[in-house]
Length: 333
Ligand code: 2P0
Image (cartoon, rainbow, N blue to C red):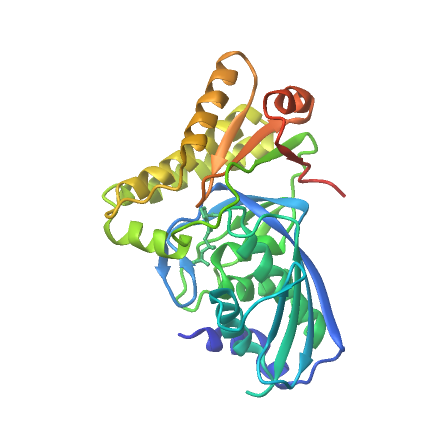
């Protein structure tokens, strides 16, 4: 099964209908996984080995504006800067957009503005692809459901399937080969006191793309076989913690899940380590503050930066210990 087959399953005859509007505009939030997606059971459609659970970042994410033209190639402008057609980002995006062109000569202008650091492990590919899929929907007037948008976003980047939604989100692994049961869905609970702290320890682009890293881990990580069972138990604990507004269990489970994911990477060969010295020092600082009674946890993705988890009543304390932290209210209106 190819990506184009999935697009055909979802769009049907709409795939051949000209754009209904002159431009399509959409925003999608960034998302932070509390139970990570790490490993694919199928590469072409980005079908994951396990389900995962995330929280979207409210007004932090990407806005995309799409228009159609007939020039020689797509025009991509990212945060005000034109991206060269030969850059890996352009190639990946144009390749994805091939799935949706009305004819092979149709080209797009894509203007993306993000307010999260690109490629610093803050899920910018997730909000980028989700915003583009939503902008395509607006441009062509498909009126797809969020479930359908989630499946299309997954074809661009796995974690983008979760950025279609706000709040807590579960991405179902599914069982089908065509991935039609592999989509993200919102968990309706609103946890107004929850806060996420974005700690940029290095804004440099990461060396090894998460796509390669997760593939290597699945292929030869000696600890990877333990990962699916860890995810099942963490998903159960997280869903219960969300329902009960049990912050300690939420924080502990998210932190433990992230550390276990990084352990699977360290067990791969050649080994994969996204932490830099500042990452480890900051983890130790979080552990010390927790010992002193501050309910504070962290999670880490495929990069050196950390995301802190805490509650509204501790914002001042957290900021006093981490003056550079950017505090996000994920349930902001
Ligand atoms: C996550 N990450 O659940 C995990 C945790 C990084 C660490 O999803 O190959 O960019 O495009 O499906 O979605 C990053 O992986 O990978 C990711 P592809 P993606 O957020």
